Image (cartoon, rainbow, N blue to C red; front, side, top):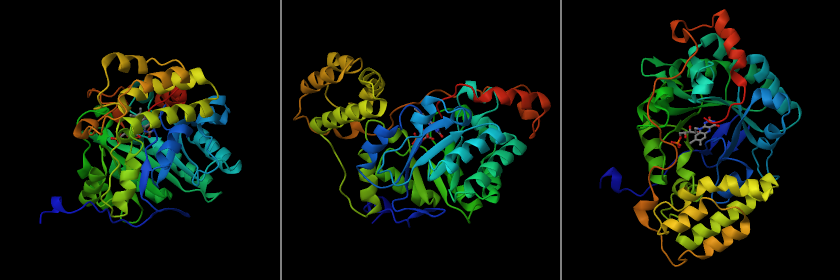
Length: 390
Ligand SMILES: Cc1cc2nc3c(=O)[nH]c(=O)nc-3n(C[C@H](O)[C@H](O)[C@H](O)COP(=O)(O)O)c2cc1C
């Protein structure tokens, strides 16, 4: 029997992050604009794992902007309240971690060093940051120190580097490990790849080997439980981080749970079940935002993901993508052919953001040295403004 023919059984022990035990070593990747309280609930109803909130900028949190306080809210039954911080300045990141710890607003904190968006990297933030070893070290050390005061495990999430000629992940992983992080997660792409091409799982395997003493989590291009199984087998990671694969498919966490339990059953929803999930998602979003119009505007982007591969007419798709309120949504969903079965492969595979590779926007002379010069120090101060996305 070939390996491929074996039933998918992912044998991994629970993931340990400090004092926290995540029985099913699966992480919902933080996604700005997606992994809010409503979406996390929808996903975790299907399976176990760690469900990370949308990233929040340290400065906005320290300034207590209403949006940042909304982002870090959790449902009462979220056992592990997981928050992701973005920051570029050790003092502000430290203050944000302190706020979370002192006010008991999180059980796990992740730092985002993976954001490839030009307005972030142009100022030295996100995936551009680990290139500056002094700054990266100071941020991680400060964050770990503040988090440890409340015994809160702190993790980092990063990319391979800026581009293939400027890789940072092995060094950043070692620095973070030495600073005392509870785990590191690697998205196997460089910043300049954005979401294009294929994630490089070999780099994940190399990081796993380089850091034998802490958990390493693998991220990139897991679209099914079978992909998760392949990643675990190929790289030896301690857990998987799943992003775009669950957009419009919150039941992927059910499939992952089954695979980790050694079961072969998979959730294959027909249109009726998809319609139910969409409606429930909308209701949860209304609860989360407290504003029906805002909730429905936000859910529009999910429609193409939910109905990918299903038989839905063009007109109906267009109307779903501009739905204004819950009553209209009900009416549109009722027009679907509820007996229509799961379409198979058409509903699977890549979805969500892709993009094309382009040179990463960076501050002047960023790549010339691995430490900050005075001008860059000033640039980076401005890097926390109005940032979202990873
Ligand atoms: C819409 C969107 C928003 C994202 N926002 C964040 C974020 O806030 N923080 C972060 O670390 N990564 C963010 N990411 C990156 C994902 O967490 C993940 O690393 C990436 O999508 C690769 O995993 P995947 O192939 O499973 O999607 C975002 C990705 C997408 C598609």
